Image (tube, rainbow, N blue to C red; front, side, top):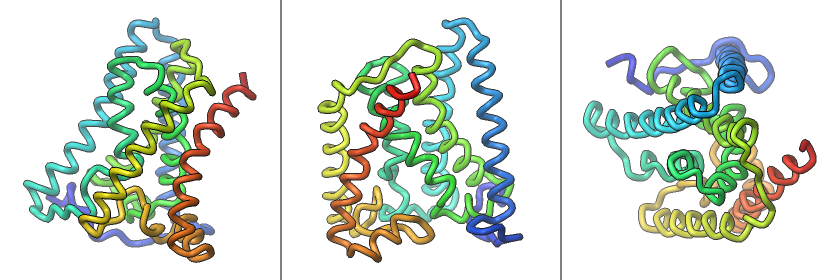
Length: 241
């Protein structure tokens, strides 16, 4: 069971804000990402689509596996912390739906909402599994899921002919608002902090924003920031293309 344990992480050599093992893991993610993009680029369209869908479901499997391990192996399932209701978990599930349907609104939503938060989760992780990674299931799941949440939303743009559109803002905003409000209500009921709506997680810029502005303003900024992601990513696409 040691392979599945989440406890016992400890820092090694610190380099600025980072731990040496974290930097090593991030470089491995970069190398794996480059290899994946090269492979997809050189595959025919049909095979590339199959690989894209397969990886989306691998990500979903890792999410379900973590839920199952906490529930049935260690029997320490805590509904205040483990439910798949953080932004990256929600994006992961929407990404799976987008990979199956290739719906333009869903593709545009994950293109806007997924890469930047997933990147920040790798750089400023709340979990020790990413700050001080070890070769175990939790670290593998953390780095794999967040790396794929950066890559998979941009692969349709790079290789499948999908084009993000500013005109998709309203349906994308409706999706995000529905998720935000639903999670806020669940947080009120469970006294939880899903999507980090109530307060910022330690060791991250969100905690800094909360300390500067206070919790009420922080919640508003949180909503506005994630709303702004749509324009940030779509404008970036327009600028690059």
